[in-house]
Length: 235
Ligand code: HPA
Image (cartoon, rainbow, N blue to C red; front, top):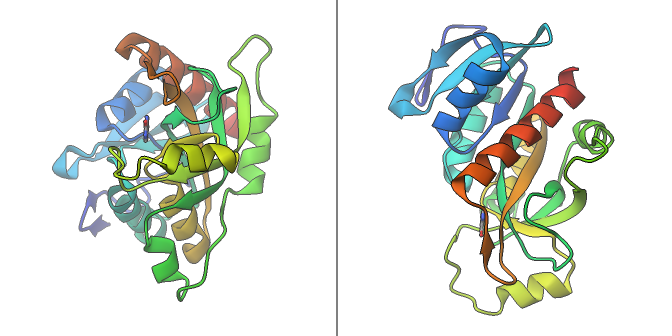
């Protein structure tokens, strides 16, 4: 089935797709964690793969950065490629003081400065929330000695370099855990198209104190997170 941004054979995708932002991360996950992984699409180098985790079929595909990019792939995956569950496996920037680099943030709900959910929801405020079925499974699969799991609200922004200098304080006052650039769009889209969605994110940056993971720390943190997600949803 060929769609504008995904050129894949019918049935090439599993019902569950993991979405890292970076297509090379998708390839890394496919090569190092999945059994029998095959590349199923590569339009504009946005690589997608299908393989198995402990005998169960799963796909992984890059989403690009930001709501518009992630949503166009997610739309085609759900609408045309038979996908039922989308799990973003990415990184986020922490806002809350108590959150640490390397913690995992599970986005229970997402506010946003993007207008996509208002546009799709007739101008009303949409509560962009995770699939409880997916979230509860990942949240309870945490390993002793593994990264802390934080479940709460995140803010999805169209800006990485935000023009509002007061935004971080506002988000802190309202108890937000972290910032990302995709979750609210993904949750709104999944609701509209009747699919399930969840964002699981490694804290790669801390916006209080300006702390950042090295490239190696990021890779290790994201790998750990992806294994946890695969085990909790398919183990
Ligand atoms: N802001 C938004 N998204 C992010 C960040 C950030 O600082 N770090 C990782 N994803």
